[in-house]
Amino acid sequence: MADPNRRRSPNWSLVVLALLPFASGASGAAGASDWPHWRGPDHNGFSSETALPSRWSETENVVWKLAMPSVSGATPIISGDLVFLNVGDGDTLELWAVDRASGTPRWKRPLGPGNHVTRKQNMSSPSPVTDGKRVWALTGTGVLRGFDFEGRELWARDLQAEYGKFGLNWGYGSSPLYAHDTLFVQVLHGMKTDDPSYVVAIDPATGENRWRVERPTDARMESPDSYSTPAILDLGERHELVVTGGDYVTGHDLTSGREVWRLAGLNPEKQAAYRIVASPVVAGSMIYVPSRVSPLLALDASGAVPVVAWRLERGTDVPTPATDGMSFFLVNDRGLLQRLDARTGAEVWPAQRLAQGVYSASPVVADHKLYATNETGVTSVVAIDGDFRLITENTLEGYSLASPAISGGRLFLRNDRFLYCIGLE
Image (tube, rainbow, N blue to C red; front, side, top):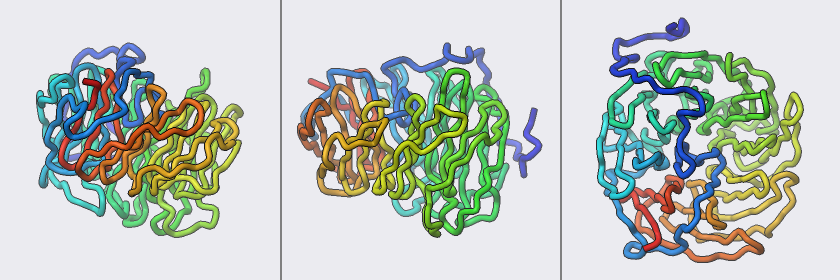
């Protein structure tokens, strides 16, 4: 059924060109070695991959590299033998499917015009997401399209045409989330609009809404803006969508979108420019909620309503933390690495300084190593067994905003010049 709340419905905003009989639920899940979401297979920045390289350069351990037309904050998404990329090329936005083994593009599909730069990011910043059979791409212009792995378009929508223009100060940058055979998209804004913020759940096969709910806030000026991506809390029979922004973290029923709990405290002094960039991370019954540096809240959601288990007064602004539920790794915008006990917040390592520079990409952890890339293309590789030990710092020339991806014993690193596939020679 079409959503009665749509403001406008252009003829092209929902075009079903090909519907294939995809299985629902876990049968459509991506493989264990895939990187189907911008934060990896478990949405937490961790991977079980092994035999990953620690050292590389422009000439060492580069399996292949593919020229990029511009910088993008979108993480490469990997499923099977394909790598998916949101790409901004001049005025045009595209989804690329690249052969994982060779780095050769298999197909490129237009996502629409209107690409432009807003400070660091352009309109390709949201990362695609996949279930292993289909891939969905969202742009900063509000276009959301679904494709099969052969590049056939399944459906298309324009969220700005339907619900009003995005009103974020620095352009829309949230990525879609795929979970429980549903696509979830948040639009939390307010700096440049009086339209309400909202969250929408979409049928991944047809593109139709399952629900859409407004998400009110009393945040002011820029503070309603959020560039984060939602997370999923799965606790037995309890399944909730976790959304952060507008001074609050909220939990929503997956079947209806109904807000079932709300917690304040992300902007204790109700400042006017407390937009949120880093995304929430869930591990077991714990929800980790960054704000604009201070505070970072760790919530225990084992009860009906989450409560604050611990807090960090100096957290992160842009990079999203990584956690496996035991260790909690946080890299701030200036490259200060912290390792804490994920349950208690106790310091495991004293804070450590990584390579000099600004950090926008989020750290990832695999093969007993943490990888953190700064904007100048330097990736610090840190051993996570025992005491802090910096293994090496590796440089790839170029400007880098995208977080690393890991799949099949390879690292995928993206900057404004190339997408690199890094592996042991």
